[in-house]
Length: 89
Image 1 (cartoon, rainbow, N blue to C red):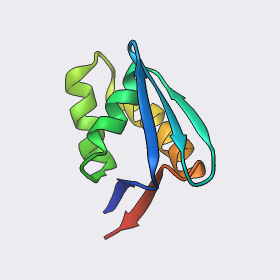
Image 2 (image 1 turned 45 degrees about the horizontal axis):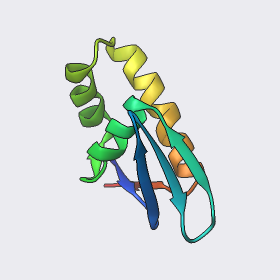
Image 3 (image 1 turned 135 degrees about the vertical axis):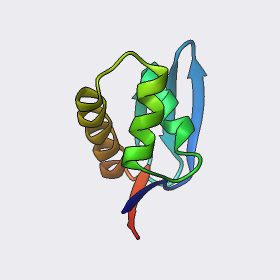
Image 4 (image 1 turned 90 degrees about the vertical axis):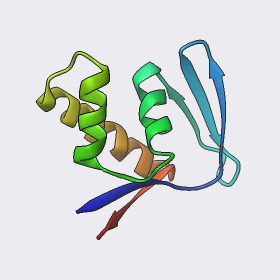
């Protein structure tokens, strides 16, 4: 099992349904849409990918396959920008 956790010291500001994030350490900026904001909120508690997708599938009208593909892509972007990490357990 692999756990996804928030990483770093990101400053966030909500702008309508979206969020702008900035890393105080490396100056990276990220813009999140409504679903990205929800994923970030859910990652306040480290979670396994399957658990994260299960929660999102109940909140949004999305198929399990589409949800998993999009969440994996988003988490990869977070990791590449230093906003999340994977912790194999």
